[in-house]
Image (cartoon, rainbow, N blue to C red; front, top):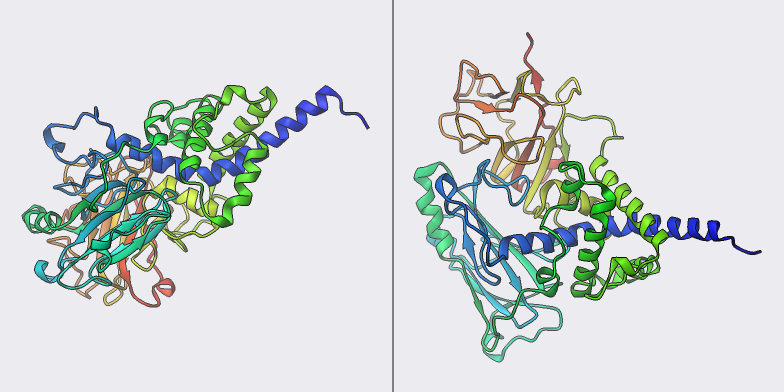
Length: 460
């Protein structure tokens, strides 16, 4: 049976559509990693001044940067930042050789919570270093990339084999209000990152250096900036193929990469979108658009619940869709043995949260979030960033000073755009849509059976 040109073109387009959808879901977290690395390591990047001076997490490759204050609404490099932590970050490239990471002494800092989280190029939180698994007096750890060798002089140290050569270090240090900042900064100062003997300082990864277009989130470009998917798709797939050449993924994923290649998406720095068949390109662009919508709409077809506790973050295995969704709403999420996240998008009546209504969140006496470290509720505007407000308060948790408890010992948090009579427990919201993230660090056993109280709308 002969194939007409029309049906052949339709088949090519269908192939591109199928490959484009699966390649977007698989490759979005990877591409976000390289995009963020590009953004935060650009030599010409201008640091912000004024009220946000020093808050940037931008620094050269293989260099630690310590943010000296908690994130605010002015910080917009990474979505859904926590507001009760000081971040210490570094982009580490192990292709040129190992690096030595110094983990601070927990004993020297009065047991202050901290964790040095390590992420591979696919956003997998493959290791967390801190008081729970490091010596109380601190220790040095050797980071080695795939196929890397540990120098003889360092073989007595702990070795962490990293799944990809590009590693994102995100250090989180618990911090209170401004008087507590110096003590938290002292812990930051004890974190160190150095090249192993014989390791040179090489260039940034080729996929970072050769990034196509501005370092803008592909999903945000379509959903927030209004770009046509057909315009964004060529940039996304080009950057994805460049990244796949440097981080080809797990052995278990080789079949997927072979499937992508059948649709023209072949890893390598020589990938050229314009060299693909026109009908194939059209299908890939359609698959890209479908992938964006799929990741953005995850959860919409499920019954609305006041809180949704993340079942798996940080370590995903083959849960590609969940990994992509987490990269979109919370890039750099911790594994669930370190922290559990719960998202609140609707109230007790299953209506979307809106600051013009006003709500109360009530924790009964003796029924606060079950954690061994700390917990907090953080408010985000619809754009996934912290909301500017007159109190400059973005979160309330177990360390918020001045909280007023009810006579029966319960804790009531007031959430609204309008200022309530009592400001001590007020979490300011925008005059429109918002959502909440409850973070629980070092969650206790049985946390998943604990019921988070629903937000009750303020009547009248």
